[in-house]
Image 1: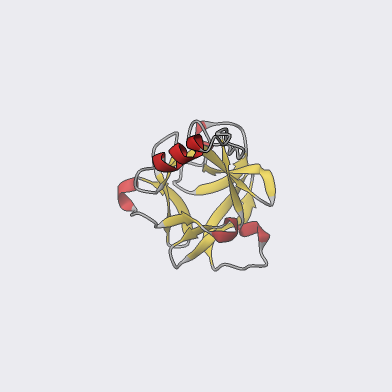
Image 2 (image 1 turned 90 degrees about the vertical axis):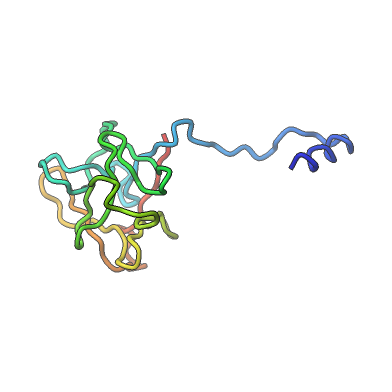
Amino acid sequence: IQGMYGAVEELEYDTTDDCVVEVSKTNTFNIKANSDMDLCVDRSALGSRNVVLKKCDGSQSQVWRIDFGKQIRNKDNNFCIMKQGTRIVCKQCKFTTENDVTHGFGDTIVFGTSGVMTPGVASGEETSLSVAVLDEENFLQEFTFAYL
Protein backbone atom coordinates (compact mmCIF):
# COMPACT_ATOMS: atom_id res chain seq x y z
CA ILE A 1 0.00 0.00 0.00
CA GLN A 2 2.87 2.36 0.79
CA GLY A 3 4.21 1.80 -2.73
CA MET A 4 0.84 2.56 -4.24
CA TYR A 5 0.50 5.73 -2.18
CA GLY A 6 3.95 6.83 -3.38
CA ALA A 7 2.92 6.27 -7.00
CA VAL A 8 -0.28 8.29 -6.47
CA GLU A 9 1.74 11.17 -5.02
CA GLU A 10 4.35 10.97 -7.77
CA LEU A 11 1.65 11.17 -10.44
CA GLU A 12 0.11 14.09 -8.52
CA TYR A 13 -3.30 12.45 -8.17
CA ASP A 14 -5.73 13.72 -5.56
CA THR A 15 -5.08 11.71 -2.39
CA THR A 16 -8.35 12.42 -0.62
CA ASP A 17 -10.52 9.36 -0.15
CA ASP A 18 -13.73 9.61 -2.17
CA CYS A 19 -15.21 6.49 -0.59
CA VAL A 20 -16.16 7.25 2.99
CA VAL A 21 -17.20 4.20 4.99
CA GLU A 22 -18.83 4.64 8.37
CA VAL A 23 -17.08 2.57 11.03
CA SER A 24 -18.25 1.99 14.57
CA LYS A 25 -16.08 3.78 17.10
CA THR A 26 -17.10 1.34 19.84
CA ASN A 27 -17.17 -1.93 17.85
CA THR A 28 -20.45 -2.66 19.64
CA PHE A 29 -23.88 -3.18 18.18
CA ASN A 30 -27.49 -4.07 18.83
CA ILE A 31 -28.85 -7.13 17.06
CA LYS A 32 -32.19 -5.99 15.67
CA ALA A 33 -34.96 -8.02 14.07
CA ASN A 34 -35.35 -6.96 10.44
CA SER A 35 -39.08 -7.62 10.76
CA ASP A 36 -39.34 -4.98 13.51
CA MET A 37 -36.32 -2.70 14.05
CA ASP A 38 -37.71 -1.74 17.48
CA LEU A 39 -36.91 -5.26 18.74
CA CYS A 40 -33.42 -6.11 20.02
CA VAL A 41 -31.77 -9.36 21.04
CA ASP A 42 -31.46 -9.30 24.84
CA ARG A 43 -31.09 -11.62 27.80
CA SER A 44 -34.34 -12.73 29.38
CA ALA A 45 -35.43 -10.79 32.46
CA LEU A 46 -36.98 -13.98 33.83
CA GLY A 47 -33.72 -15.14 35.44
CA SER A 48 -32.96 -17.77 32.82
CA ARG A 49 -30.01 -17.79 30.48
CA ASN A 50 -32.36 -17.59 27.49
CA VAL A 51 -31.74 -15.01 24.79
CA VAL A 52 -34.93 -13.28 23.64
CA LEU A 53 -36.27 -10.41 21.55
CA LYS A 54 -37.40 -7.38 23.56
CA LYS A 55 -38.24 -3.76 22.80
CA CYS A 56 -34.98 -1.85 22.30
CA ASP A 57 -34.38 0.26 25.40
CA GLY A 58 -30.68 1.18 25.24
CA SER A 59 -29.68 -1.14 28.09
CA GLN A 60 -26.22 -2.74 28.16
CA SER A 61 -27.81 -6.20 28.05
CA GLN A 62 -28.85 -5.37 24.45
CA VAL A 63 -25.31 -4.39 23.42
CA TRP A 64 -23.06 -7.00 21.80
CA ARG A 65 -19.60 -7.21 20.26
CA ILE A 66 -17.50 -9.72 18.37
CA ASP A 67 -14.60 -10.73 20.61
CA PHE A 68 -11.10 -11.91 19.71
CA GLY A 69 -12.38 -15.49 19.43
CA LYS A 70 -15.05 -14.37 16.93
CA GLN A 71 -17.82 -15.02 19.44
CA ILE A 72 -20.85 -12.76 19.93
CA ARG A 73 -20.31 -11.43 23.46
CA ASN A 74 -22.75 -9.47 25.64
CA LYS A 75 -21.50 -6.06 26.82
CA ASP A 76 -23.32 -6.30 30.17
CA ASN A 77 -22.17 -9.69 31.49
CA ASN A 78 -19.47 -10.71 28.96
CA PHE A 79 -21.26 -14.00 28.23
CA CYS A 80 -21.62 -15.33 24.68
CA ILE A 81 -24.56 -16.35 22.51
CA MET A 82 -24.72 -20.10 21.90
CA LYS A 83 -27.28 -22.81 21.35
CA GLN A 84 -28.38 -25.32 23.95
CA GLY A 85 -30.49 -27.89 22.18
CA THR A 86 -32.73 -25.67 20.10
CA ARG A 87 -32.78 -22.81 22.64
CA ILE A 88 -30.51 -19.79 22.26
CA VAL A 89 -28.77 -18.94 25.51
CA CYS A 90 -26.11 -16.61 26.90
CA LYS A 91 -23.42 -18.49 28.84
CA GLN A 92 -19.74 -18.23 29.69
CA CYS A 93 -17.75 -17.96 26.49
CA LYS A 94 -15.46 -20.83 27.44
CA PHE A 95 -18.32 -23.17 26.46
CA THR A 96 -18.27 -22.06 22.82
CA THR A 97 -15.63 -22.15 20.10
CA GLU A 98 -14.75 -19.90 17.20
CA ASN A 99 -17.43 -19.79 14.50
CA ASP A 100 -20.05 -21.70 16.55
CA VAL A 101 -22.23 -18.67 15.86
CA THR A 102 -21.73 -16.45 12.81
CA HIS A 103 -23.48 -13.64 10.96
CA GLY A 104 -24.48 -15.42 7.77
CA PHE A 105 -25.57 -14.38 4.32
CA GLY A 106 -29.01 -12.84 4.04
CA ASP A 107 -28.75 -11.24 7.50
CA THR A 108 -29.11 -14.53 9.36
CA ILE A 109 -27.36 -15.58 12.56
CA VAL A 110 -26.09 -19.09 11.91
CA PHE A 111 -25.41 -21.83 14.48
CA GLY A 112 -23.03 -24.13 12.57
CA THR A 113 -25.00 -26.71 10.62
CA SER A 114 -27.90 -26.68 13.13
CA GLY A 115 -29.81 -23.75 11.68
CA VAL A 116 -30.42 -20.04 12.19
CA MET A 117 -31.78 -17.78 14.93
CA THR A 118 -35.56 -17.79 14.71
CA PRO A 119 -38.17 -15.90 16.76
CA GLY A 120 -40.75 -18.06 18.46
CA VAL A 121 -43.62 -17.42 20.83
CA ALA A 122 -44.15 -14.06 22.52
CA SER A 123 -44.77 -14.14 26.26
CA GLY A 124 -45.35 -10.79 27.92
CA GLU A 125 -42.69 -8.40 26.66
CA GLU A 126 -40.31 -11.14 25.47
CA THR A 127 -40.24 -13.29 22.34
CA SER A 128 -38.31 -16.53 22.61
CA LEU A 129 -35.49 -17.28 20.17
CA SER A 130 -34.53 -20.73 18.98
CA VAL A 131 -32.45 -22.47 16.33
CA ALA A 132 -34.44 -23.65 13.31
CA VAL A 133 -33.75 -24.73 9.75
CA LEU A 134 -33.28 -21.80 7.37
CA ASP A 135 -36.45 -20.95 5.48
CA GLU A 136 -35.53 -18.49 2.75
CA GLU A 137 -39.14 -17.30 2.63
CA ASN A 138 -39.14 -16.49 6.37
CA PHE A 139 -38.01 -12.87 6.76
CA LEU A 140 -38.45 -13.27 10.54
CA GLN A 141 -35.10 -15.12 10.55
CA GLU A 142 -33.24 -11.98 9.41
CA PHE A 143 -31.35 -9.74 11.83
CA THR A 144 -29.22 -6.61 11.48
CA PHE A 145 -26.10 -5.67 13.42
CA ALA A 146 -26.85 -1.99 14.17
CA TYR A 147 -23.46 -0.55 15.15
CA LEU A 148 -23.41 2.02 17.94
